[in-house]
Structure formats: C-alpha cells, structure tokens
Image (cartoon, rainbow, N blue to C red; front, side):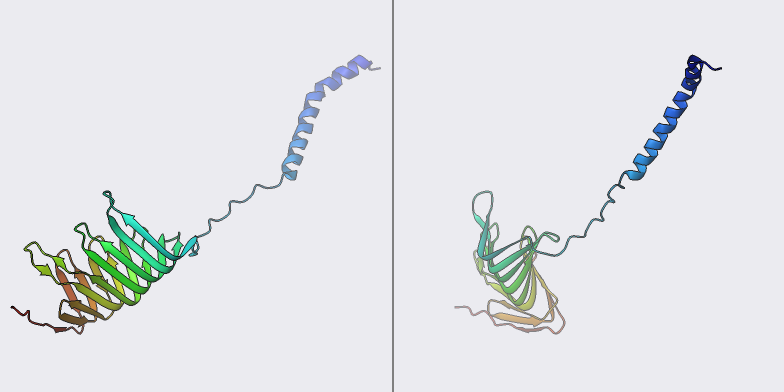
Amino acid sequence: MISARNLWDRLSLYLPVFLMGLLAMATYWLVRSTPPPDQPQATLAPRHEPDYFMRKFAVRTYDASGQLKSEVSGGEARHFPDTDTLEIDQVHIRSFSPQGQLTVATAQRAIANGDGSEVQLMGNAQVVREPVQGINGQTQPGVSFASEFLHAFMNTERVKSHKPVTLTRGNDRFTADSLDYDNLDRVMLLNGRVRGQLVPTRTP
C-alpha cells in the first residue's frame, strides 16, 4: 500500500505542472474576456465652418510707432479656421503706406487672408489711392480701380483682376478685360479689349 506520505510526494511532483496549466487557462480566459482596444478613429478633415463671427465691427492695426496702419470694417465677418481666412460683407478697408499714403477698398463682399496682406474684393469692388506728393514736389494724381473682382495686395501695393476693369488716373480713364497694376514699380498691364482716354494737362 502507498502511504499518505508517498502519495503526497508523488502529487507534489505534478503540482507545478498543474499550477502552470491552471495559470495558462486563466490567462486564456482573461484574454478572451477582455474587450478589444478601441480602434484609432480616422482623423476627420476640417470642415469649412466659421469658428467666430462679428457684426457691425471695426478692427484697427498699428505699426511699432503707434501709427494707424489699417482699418477694416463691415456689416458682418466670419472667420474660417481651416483656411485662416475672413469673409466680410459690406467691407470697407483703409490702409496706410509707410509714407502715410491712404488706399481705400470697398466691395459687397471680401475674403482676406490671416494677416490682411491680401484681400479679394467681389461685387461692386473699388480700390482708390489718394493723390500723393512726389519726390520732385509735384502732386501725383490719385488712382482708382473698379470691377466686379479685384485682388488687392496691400503690402506690395499691387492690384490684379481677371475680369473687366476700369482704371482712372487723374482725368485719364482706361478700360480692359484684365489688369495687373504694380504701384511700386509704376507698371500697369492691361489685357484684352483695351480702351483709353487721355486728357492733356493744362498749363497755366
């Protein structure tokens, strides 16, 4: 007969194997019972929706010396974070060059980039640059642009349009199918059906 001591000795030899098997079964059950990890959600493309708006507003910016650099006002403005643009209804923009020269832009609607250096004017768009005194002391006539679309580059004093445009400089008047005007280089490109009316300057 097998004594109790011998039986215990034999069982103790298989005890580690039994415990390992029990641990394996418990691990398998735990893995099967644990819910699967959350799948990473696909990154949603940003939607073109405004994150804030302003009504009957006026925003002014100043240079380092405290002089007024620009002023933008309108009936309503909506900011779109996906493109960092500002859509403005009934826009009115006043911009001053470093020399203090004033340029005014108006339109039924406008789209401006984040820093306001580019403005697309749509619907009865107009950009007017006031007369300025030249280096020789003579007054340079003012310049105005009128079109259904004008793209104004405020920092480089450039105006472009791919639609019919009317340009007035003093008493002179030009019309064209498109325009690229660079005020700093004094270069004007008129394309398409170009017509001009030049009024001679009268000397006293």
